[in-house]
Image (tube, rainbow, N blue to C red; front, side, top):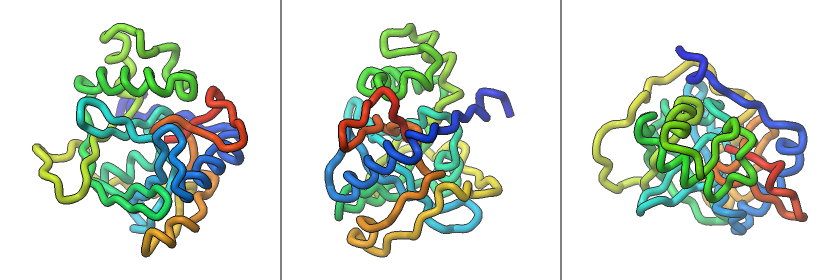
Length: 215
């Protein structure tokens, strides 16, 4: 496996203990912070639900989850599960996911950085929304991208890289919400947060976006 395919940036103390907790708290109460949702994905080995705050990018009629911190645990679990759940307050959405090929990530990464660069720019090595296609393509292998669609919608093609891998990533453990109400009270544990977004990382009490992250 290439070095870029193993790329991971760990969240800082502020992100884990302040920012992500604030975003998850607000999102569970139905307040989306710059597109935030609480993502739940089954662990690829244990089968238990893991949760983390993310941001959902809508681009040209499609929705995407982007991992600004690289190949973190939720991305490995997503490849194995092929989908998951998104929570916003009491609303629950089941979805399927298809990983986007590196050659097709450029417009998605550009759109993601255009909206959330203030929060996640630090994770992209100086590459931004105004960078060239070549520069964006060069960093594509470092940042997994998944196209998501509501469960039941027709999905052309098959998921790429859907093979399960050993280990779940204990930091993202979370009890599966049996119903939306249960999800609203579910606590996102420290290891499951950050990067930023999956969407921008937001905050409640005037948390500075530039320091936030999740994904």
